[in-house]
Length: 146
Image 1 (cartoon, one colour):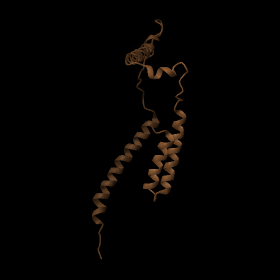
Image 2 (cartoon, helix red, strand yellow):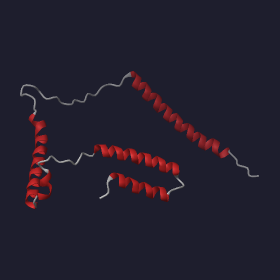
Image 3 (spheres, helix red, strand yellow):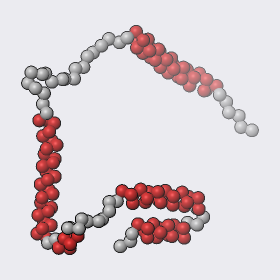
Image 4 (cartoon, one colour):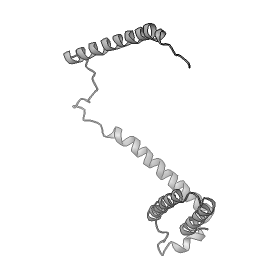
């Protein structure tokens, strides 16, 4: 199995052999992959097992593996169930009313009415000006070829 250093060197040897004319791009890619690989190596936990479990790694039988899987599955189900039940279990006391979202319809302010009036007038006059330009000015334009 390849370790991280061998894997990186294999990738970069292939890149440098095949793409010699794009050196700047290669250097940028190399530095990015190198930084990424360093970050990933820092995040990978050490594979040192406690002394009492080192001998058990090769001795797990298929039955024990199935038991471990079943136990992990049940623990995951219980954790999910507790997360779903926990919000409903934290209910408000019976005397306190629950908060509800209320939508209130309000009147428009004078500034909002003026803004809407200006936008609608600008839209109407803009459309009229565009139609007038298209009908009156565009037909008068002549293109002379020499």
